[in-house]
Picture 1 (tube, rainbow, N blue to C red):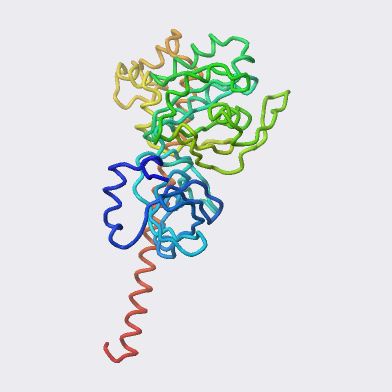
Picture 2 (spheres, rainbow, N blue to C red):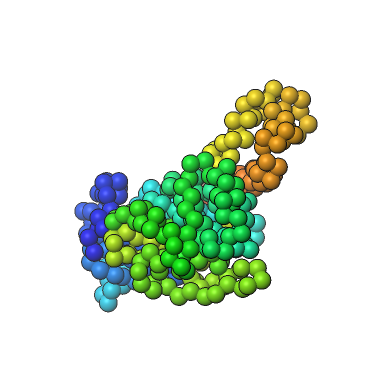
Length: 361
């Protein structure tokens, strides 16, 4: 494959320069399964593992390859390869992952994506607050979010849903479609540009794989019917995968997300809830908590109906999550620093012991 057809450009080429003289090669991560990866590049397809050095230097889960990453690798016989490094990411769609014990880490769902399709069903599983959560993470990813409302043939009041989403989308395009009936999907082809990557994210049963099959014009993935009582689906897609369409565009399919814990900061929340931020500028106090403080413009907007209670409630919920996440990340950073210090101390005493053994100390 030609690298440019996989999204290669000046950004990645400049970061690859230090590795070019060592006989290493670049390739894009197409699939990940536990500790093994499938990578695509100019020299074909390889099954790869990370090097011992990369493993040793990794401080978090996010330091390991994710689908969409550009990896620096050396080939081995029988289409095997070793990944020595990852090039910096232009965009990252991440969520919070809880590891064993109390440690919190970043899970990268997709990397180096240009557009993210936030797919939601217009059946019984429609949830406006969930879309707000997806948008919060999408705005923070560096990719362009596009809201795709699938199953419009099942919507009881399509216009009402579009108005509600429009109030929280803040410029993100909204496309109602029916992937199963192949209606409305022609509008999505404008995002499928050769060399560009589109990630499909959403909960189980929203029709991501059906939509990808419709856009590709062929069956790239298996689909299953959702339950009729609650419109919930089973995980048809079991792992994230980057696929190249005949048009030259790339898509990343991923398993349905049962939960999407935010991974970001207060700035990402402000971008997603900019209406609340604008109203809050009218509060008497700059540090207003929008609770019982006098002169709170947000409480006035809630009282007169200018600001929706559910929208504000979700804002407060995400704000609490981000503050809790910040505390956990600080705690993780301290633990990592302590581990690094312990490692240096042990190495120091090992070096001293070796020098004494040689009679040099």
